[in-house]
Length: 121
Image (tube, rainbow, N blue to C red; front, side, top):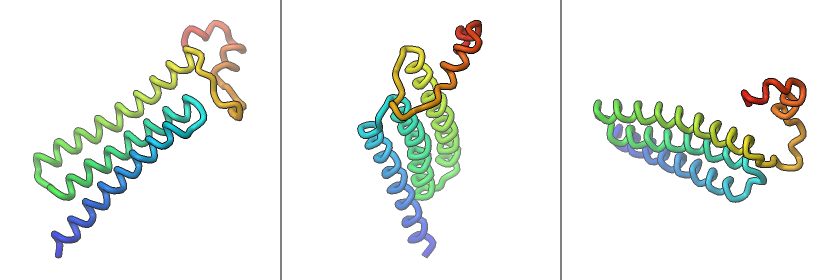
């Protein structure tokens, strides 16, 4: 009985993780500008891969796998968020335009208000 529940939960997590990664891939194609695409990919990479790893850990829960899985999840969550931020910052610094419906541009307003701080942006 426990083995059946373990298999169902593990496979469900694998399917949900794959669906999140698929939705990020669809977002990469369908979203209107660079910044929303970066956000979709960073979120999908962090959450989707973490769910895939947890699903695998549920299916094969050994001590070695749990240690490796926790390290992989922490590494994935940290690197996907930092990578998404770095990509968005690089896009901003190279002049990637946001979608037309994006009204406030806080970084541009801050740079206009305090020109000495533009080196930090």
